[in-house]
Length: 396
Image (tube, rainbow, N blue to C red; front, side):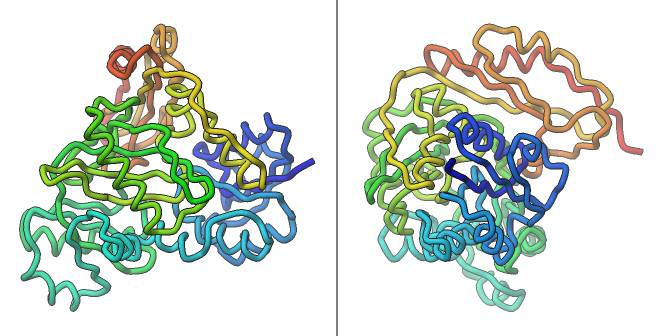
């Protein structure tokens, strides 16, 4: 029996764990949390942090898998690259892992290959910030170079905002570096891509809904895009060149782009599947392509096919609520019974304390729908959201 090692056992990795089991793999999972939800569904568990590069390499050598995968998260990518190299397994190179997880190295790769991107400054300490602050144009955005999920992202309108934003972003930076960059104005999109033998195949373009400034947390996604064909082509060209700039030759890519008045510009990309259930749920619902299965098979050295089997609409919308302590959630049963609703999930349940939505971990839950087109799928999601009531009490 072939074996696959999945880095992480949280709810984000459940689609990979379950699909690997369905495909007949013996599944090992790595997670620092011994109560992580995916452990009970795997065959073997290793109590190792998903960012412990030495531990992951050692575990991979012990487990001896045919492939190593993770979904929707950047932090383990360097460890996976090292483990794949030492275990002679298919996977991205360490150079590509760095360029696709370090926003500083990423944007420098874009610049070197003439891939449209925002202006930027990399800042490693307060003195460097003081040196460049007079050259910054406003508004701008500041964020850590090595985190995701909108963690540490801050919108700045003046020098005072930058000084605060630097400290805010620094709290979420693992390496102590932040990036100050141009605030791109325009609608945001992501492109869900699978690269085979150096050729990027764009499976779907996703329309995004965010909270906007100051943190730009994503609150919804829908497929297929509502963009006109000529605009789609511009996004696809940019994404293809960005993927090649960081060196992804095989495997998934999630590319985020903003369509400005000057044309599309890169936000960032990951050498992995998109999070927020985009590629684990929306892509298969809208295209029929089993992207999770393809990732697992490719990681294990098997051949894959990525032909679309349908053309549906799919959408996800996140539940919004006030901050406080959750004391009741109602309407879930009614929401699940709406025709077209595929999934309703609560992430923060009764008794938990929730804050304002500063990053993706603050979202209470979500609904997913499928319909004949994206607009109808969004409408169905909104119907479900109207059913769900989250009662909170103020924190004393």
